[in-house]
Every structure is written in C-alpha cells, then in structure tokens.
Amino acid sequence: FDGKIAMFYGGVQATEKGARSGVLCQTMHVYLDKPISFKDGQKDNQNAKIDRLIFDKNVYIDDTKVDEKGQFVHRTIVQGRELINFDGGRTRLIGPGEVKNLAKGTAEQSLLPPSGVKTPAAKMEWKLTHVKFRTSMHSNTADGNKKATFYGDNEGVEVFHFPTIKIEETMNPDRPKLDELYLRCSILEVEGRQTGERTTHIMIARGNVTFRTDKYLGYADIVKFDETNDIVIFEGINGNNVRLY
Image (tube, rainbow, N blue to C red):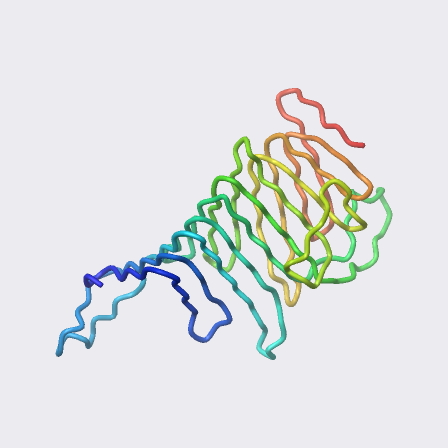
C-alpha cells in the first residue's frame, strides 16, 4: 500500500460488506481518490473513497440480490480475464468471458401476434440469460439502469436464453427446446429493467445475426428482442435481405 493504491496478490477473495456478493481473482488493485496515511494522528478526517477496482487473471464474480424479506430476486455470475470497476457504476470486462443472469421473466416468447389479437397476461418463470463474448464488455449501472454492450468481433457474441432454476444449466444452440432462444452476433447491447420482482431485458444484436428458437430460424443485420412484450424485430441494412424460416 503506497497511500493511494492497495495491491493484493495471489488467490484474492473479496466480499462486499452487507451484501451477498464477492469476487475471486489472482490480483486486485484498489485505487483511492486521494492519498491517506496510517501513521498515528493522521487517521481521522481523511474520508478517502474508492475510485476504481481492478481485478486481474481468472476473474470470477458472484452477485446475488434479495428483497427486504430475504427472498431471492436474481443472481449474476461474471467471468473474464480482467475487470475494471470505476466509481459511478462504469465497468469494463476484458474477454474472453461470460455473464450469466438468473431472474424471473415471461414464460412464453413468440413473434409479434396478429393484429387485433389480445394476449393474456404473461406467466412468470425463472429464466437464465447466458452471454459469451470474445473481446470485451462495457457496462453502466448509473441511475439504477443496467446497460451492457458486448463485443465479439469476428469470433462473435453468443446468447443463450431459456427457462431454468439452475444457473449452471446449459442448452443446445442447434436444437432449442420450447421457449429457448439462441442468438449469435458481432455486437450485443443489453438493457435490464427491474419492475417489482420481475426483471425484463431489451437486447439489440448487430452484425451477421443468427436467431434460433424451437420454431424459427432467422438471419439479419440487426435483431431487436423486447422481453417486456415478447416482440422480435428483424432489420436488413444497405439493401440486405432478412431471411426467416
């Protein structure tokens, strides 16, 4: 510790006081917004805050949220090569890596219903959203919003979205089952919205997008999926065709 930077090496395990979250990594650097001293007589009124955290090598983060009654709300697991957490909610995760989020979502997903057809209120069930990426992830949780952008370049970004109660569960991307969704693209934007006990996602996939469910197979330049109303929108740009089977 040099007064402004604290450096931890070798099998680091850190937990957040008063929360059900923690991180494992090989190296952790904690940057303060101003220098402090541990000398006698210099401990009071220093009021230094953490400016940013850097986790390096084999980063594994497990974050679980519960409500005021102690009931499980959602769980998120993040893995990557290096993670930088800035003050104010900005985060950069260097890949290859993956993010898993287990939360309640709608029990059905389909394309836009026919005009004039009223759909009943959606039933809720636990769903896992699992994103794998090669390059990096940039996220921001400022003002209570949760937004993340994943970059895969030529290697691609993969999304697995399916009902389960186990965060370790997997799905077959080649043969999705009922209510399972597989998506592959170059860049993925995800926004999570919390409404009561329900977490819904808006996903925008860009660049060589492949979309697959148990009923549909699609290719487009841009695919937008809004879990709030279960609408999927396909877009072709620069004269390219959208293909849907």
